[in-house]
Image (cartoon, rainbow, N blue to C red; front, side, top):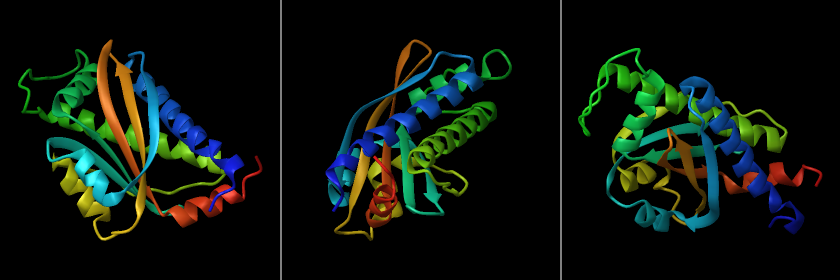
Length: 197
């Protein structure tokens, strides 16, 4: 149960997280970047696996090592990852036009982008929740999205997750990044209850 006046905190967390990500990406890539959160949903975990689908995607996940604990997963397709990486590398290094293969330079750029997105998102959350949240090193996976969700929280049968449907605009192209958050909901509610609204 959460005080209805505090529901706005979910929007605030999404917005702060998204804006922090966009600001960091803009600095690193020199491209104008904005992150738009289009919807926030609470979804049962089995339904999330269906929603995410079995298409092979790039996943970047981190674990929150402090309350509200749990995981955050960013998912995007290989083409979008390549666009972001090439924007970051610019003329500095080797890029390839092949849709499925990544050069070492592109790989490390994607890894850096993953670091920026995950830490930016969590910084935004921590600001709203008036706390600090330590996180694990980002973990990279390429495979079916549903499998990644299963690996992170497959044993939480009757739990729910918070889904931020977001879009990163960069390079004058539509890059879609979906953000799935799996906080321990009771811990999240406890943190929210302490905040004066």
